[in-house]
Image (tube, rainbow, N blue to C red):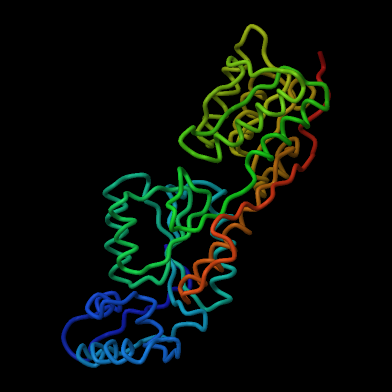
Length: 348
């Protein structure tokens, strides 16, 4: 899927097609440096400019579209999966800033598969992308190194694991969000609070669980392992996790679902058992996706600034494309508890 795509590959006067990636390789410089020469930018040394311009003439390179004043024409936005409203919110933020800057975006999903990631890298080389925003995904070290060699800037949003030291990261305050969700339920009088957790491989999942645990410990409680069930952020796992909690000899009186989609699955599980939210079970989600305002009842949740994370990612990668350093290599945007109608004091 592509939006407002700008072709920066150019075309030779005769024969085949040459990309600025190939020009950069032959000149021994980064792709953004070639882009600056192509667009007449002054921030290139005379010796480098002469070498690049000679290669451009030799290959008969003709620019077919002007790059923007941002120093980039095309960005790659890469997800592990795209089957979530969560991804749509990130895309919305990315597209807003990229479009305003005159920069195209190409959106891809690599599905956690090595073959898909390598195919994406081949496509990236061919289209001479000026920057990459990687969302909750992990690239093989060899692909990460190839990005570095190509001189393509990388920004990681919501890092899945320990981020590469040379890649700026943008995340949300997942620990404090998990703590706020649990403290809210505790303040209503709940003491048996179930957790439908996210995938443990993700840093955000582990941080939300740690926030849940910290809130319980703040009230002198310990985590009851039987009240913590696995999930994968999708509705089906919320449905299954809620049923597992309801089947306990002593079910919880409230549930913190570590994503809104899992919370919506939990609401359906409760409905099928003839249980009401919040009269029979209080429920808190995480994300504040647009649709949860219209769930029945409207969902109490932790607002994660997804669109803002996407916006900041574009601003950061554009800075890198201009050979500027970001204000901070590690940014964590705040989360906020939004109280709606899905939480109440326990009935028992």
